[in-house]
Amino acid sequence: MHITLSILLLFSLKFCFAAQEPSWHRMDTTILSKGDYKLGREEFLDKYSRDDSSRAFINFYFKKRSRWKQSLLVNAGLITLFSIAIYAALNSVETTATLGAAIGEVVIAVYLTLFVDVCSIIFIVDGILLLTHSRKKLLRILNAYNDGKPLPPNITRKRLFKKYLRLEHSHPPRN
Image 1 (tube, rainbow, N blue to C red):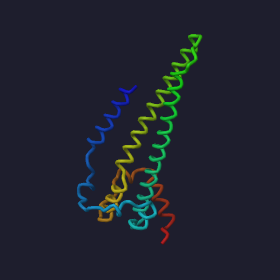
Image 2: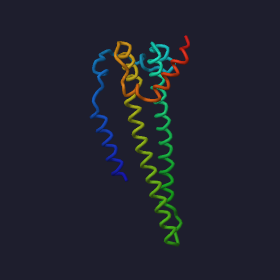
Image 3: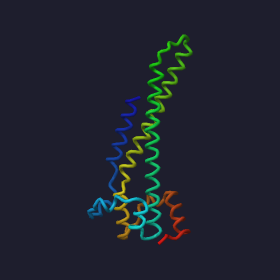
Image 4: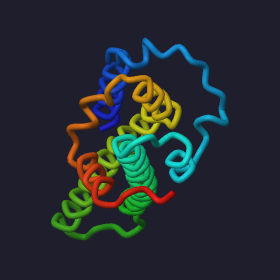
């Protein structure tokens, strides 16, 4: 089980480092101070939204980050819970009198180990997504958009972005 998890971790790290750097990142040479991107959603909307697309992009970005954070915390709790359950199942002091009961304990331990592995993979992926989709990256994309470059197509094709864009069209900004 640990070998499988290690292999998946190595493949995900290889994928992260092998990914090509986006074109908007190469052309952006501005130096950002911490005060520019350490803002909340409302502050980003007030300071950096110029039109409905930028407002939809900011809302989309913060919604995705909040989902990843929530999933990260849930999976951390599940990993802890299932690890305790595995420890309790494998170290029970009762001796099983029958073969069926012993097989049942092994099956339960295998399923719990499988759940821990799945939760660990999701936990790692969510952590990588949170690290790669920072507020600094959001600000760089918004600055490039305000300089005339389009928003990244891999984001503008998402259904959630289109939903926020429709909401921005139907509800004008509060100013």
